[in-house]
Length: 137
Image (tube, rainbow, N blue to C red; front, side, top):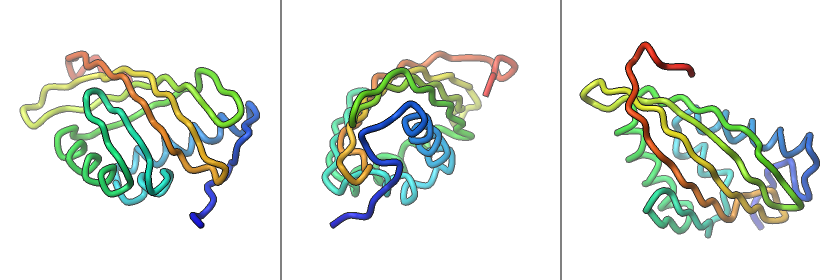
């Protein structure tokens, strides 16, 4: 049996907001090992055009992501929730190896198991090139 990751579903407004903040905090560590612990061993992701299956693929994906997206900083916002599902809006800023800054906007749909681990994450993301002076996060 996998470890529990409180708060557990069904979510209330308070626990849904807490879950989103915990996710934001974890992703801002930029540590694939830490981030991956919030997901089931057989988690399913769609991230842009990538289809990712399982924690090991999540770790590899995130390692590659943060090698490209330098000085990554993320902000998530709860959009809605019910029972064991959430909708989250987010934006993050980063720059590439040439120094070009971007703000990436997106939405995620999350589904959790009974232990509070995320079993599905579907993300749609768009990137906007920005000047460093336009950074907000």
